[in-house]
Amino acid sequence: MTSTPNQIMTRLAYLGLVPFALSLICIWADKTLFGLSAHKVFIAYSAIILSFLSGILWGNAIDHMKTSLSRNALLLSNLFALIAWGVLLHSPDSYTWSVLVLQFGFVAIWFAEKKIREVEKENSPADYQPMRNKLTGIVAFFHLVALAS
Image 1 (tube, rainbow, N blue to C red):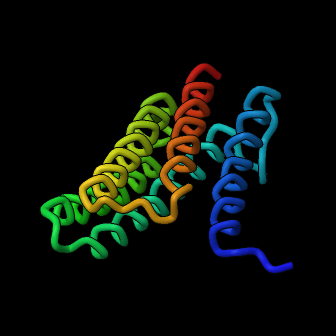
Image 2: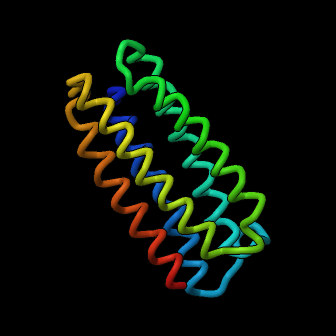
């Protein structure tokens, strides 16, 4: 049986939570991952996913060039990619700051993407926005747990 693109998107999106959860488990257990501290792995994966979402925001912006939000989304996509890079450079110095900045980035990109979809009255695929809402909530929660660890 062949999976539809929508099914693949959903599976991959939820599988993307596994490295966050694995990092948190290793943080709690005081274990390393790939010879690195689990804190560092959590930050690195978070920064990579934030950059990935910045690319999605870029794609949404160029698909909706006729809206005034497009210009802002293009700028935000680059800003958040740079923020993720900056966090990677500074994460050894400030774990708490890094986690907070990345958490803010996830929520801000979610909000910007949601706004574009609302302005454009874009509801396709129908289960995309509910999935993004859940994933962003889970990722934000994981960041709170990481802060407490």
